[in-house]
Length: 378
Image (cartoon, rainbow, N blue to C red; front, side, top):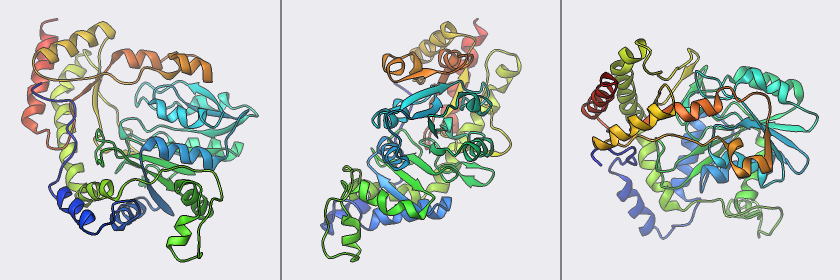
């Protein structure tokens, strides 16, 4: 493949930092690099506490535990998301209530949430698709009025903002991903963002297998023991060292990706103006992080043909989530509330183009040229 869909970011200092960890004989979690990463997130977003985790999936698991959601409770979320968003609450025994997405941002339609609320609803889970914020003021107002908790799935949202606030810092809890497909990577990893200081102690216990080990390491207690439910949600210090090299260069990575994103938009805009494709929409109140560049084709047949044409020319473009409500587990663990007007339609039309750090404007130009060739021949 000439141009991959994704290449994990690499700055050049990652190996040096990993060697520091090895030489220090401290390769398990919560060493100096873990603490640096946590503090970077806290400083960037203003949350009370950030905790690196083994994945965004496990950050979501921790958030679900902290909400105390359980059997008989309902959780409102979009169907157009990765399965981890749903699994975290299924594992707690909750019922999923899927609602439709907006056709512009592919985010949960905030105007449909209130109608899906019942006396069993406990949590709303907005997913910030492609690093573009959901309409959080409306969502938080609904949550406040109905006494609901909000867990932001900001897996794709590191460095993105809504009205000047970092994604993941607006709801009660936020969850980041540092998977190799994300803007900043530690291979597998994530982070839980906590707004309420009163929830921090329990979060640290849950992350340490249900023990109060973190208090022991801080010298607060003279021994540690099992005090709550939990699991092994703490990543290796070597993963944190790899991530730290990229967080140090976060602005450089962000600006490089934005240059590619803007080049895509400018070069493909004539096709959009001619009504051949649709391009991403960034609301005025949102600052995005160029996590993803996608186009929407006329229908699934056109998308399939375009993806095949690009592949024949050495370019890998991919589609995204199969809507969760249409999957076997989706119907088993939840229901779709209202009309599926845009969720399935978006899945069938959306095509993600290559996007990664140092993709390069020449490659963007080549990809856009092939897309133009495809449409010129139709």
